[in-house]
Image 1 (cartoon, rainbow, N blue to C red):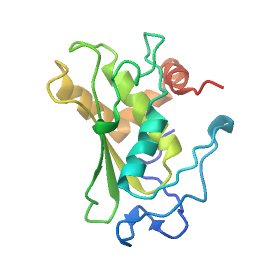
Image 2 (image 1 turned 30 degrees about the vertical axis):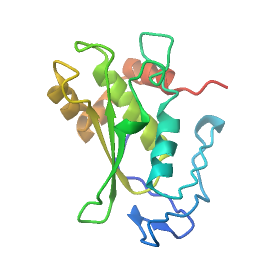
Image 3 (image 1 turned 60 degrees about the horizontal axis):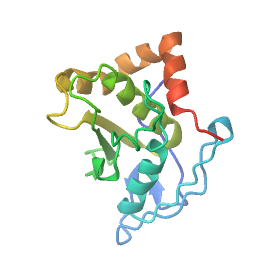
Length: 176
């Protein structure tokens, strides 16, 4: 069950609770990382560019639900679509991921957004807020999909469905 969109990761004292401590915008190195299913993403975060690259590395291997390619190979996710936004009034860093569905009527765009959210939530444990959106003008129902993939209750309900959870797990599983 997804309990929160905000996670916590201790990064050697440079980042605490999602706050980027301003030392010439240097963020520090990750001492801890998550090891889901024996996979470890050691995040070495020097600046926002490196954070963006690390996020892209996490997303690039998600498989398309219908095709044998990854989202990177299909240009659904791309490094320029990852933005580190200004922190919230509470000091939580906002990560925005914009993805580009393969066709304007892609019936699996919501599922792709769900896969992006689940994989990032499992790998980024810092106190980040995730905003996931379809690239503007690239899908006929983009507003509805954006609302769904950013709604905590809808995400939790979707992941409680065993069939949907199985599809998500298959898409985000790392090849060994």
